[in-house]
Image (cartoon, rainbow, N blue to C red; front, side):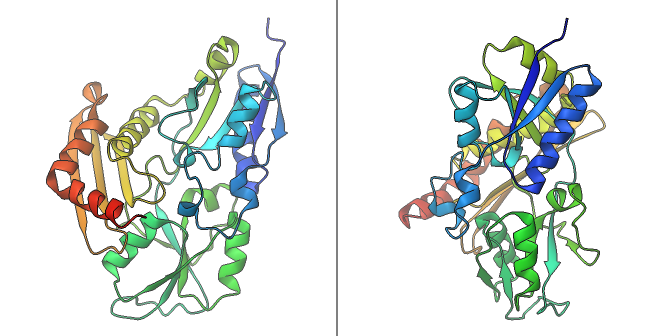
Length: 307
């Protein structure tokens, strides 16, 4: 007999609440009652420090992990790309929802001219990964820091003189804020697990684990595992420009990954394809192959620079 009200922990941003309500609706469809519990995170309160200067591992998940382990909530909902590759002790992955648009997009600013090639332009992003890939393609550009939730960042773009700012497509699309003139950056490889939502619960909480697994999308789970394993092998965080994307096609998992120097001048890429049933070690295979093919030298350069 289902009688427990599942407490869903969420950050307070519009996007985070949208994600939590999506999980709430899915649980209701399976006959589970739930309610939202709002938790503030350090990542929401510090809007000036670039992400890589904060203790990046779990910056948007730590507060929810603490609430979960303190029994203030029963499950937590995250953008999966924000979640550390190693979960907090006592926390387990309960479900990965079907992935949305994984691409990054350019939202044009007042300084947009339509042609970035060879031009000295200002682009806004707080992501080291996006910065490195943009500079690799458009080395004449300068990059300005842009922090805040999606609403705040969109407002800052409108008030700026920037050529444009880079956003995750999924975040804007989910809450109906993607501008009609935004441009898909299909050449830019996304962050590992970008576009995916993950639900976590406490280890040993069989009730919540069983409830959440009903909404799990197996293909998204397999692909995001490969991407996050790749990130883990390369020991990457927000300070290291590492990208990866895996997709299921015709019974195979097709994987693409890269690592760049932070200035975008150096780049190493990897592409692999394995049968769907043999994808469990794909991310590790890709990561180790990339390290042996020039990736280690880029990592060493980042470490030597002390950043």
